[in-house]
Length: 69
Image (cartoon, rainbow, N blue to C red; front, side):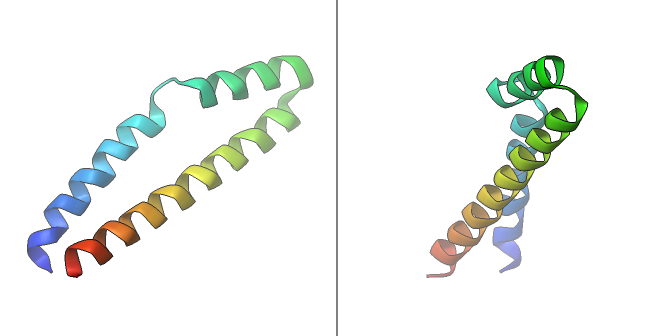
């Protein structure tokens, strides 16, 4: 198991860099905040963050299941 931790942390690191880079999700949050206000922008940001976090969790769980099998 410990030999796979390096790969998992590498994948998490790559995801983290992609998560904080400016992309369509960040532009959507900025646009929504400017057009509809801070409350709607924060709600969208929380939704994007939750969705991305779940996607990453499921990806790592699936990857670790594949490496275990």
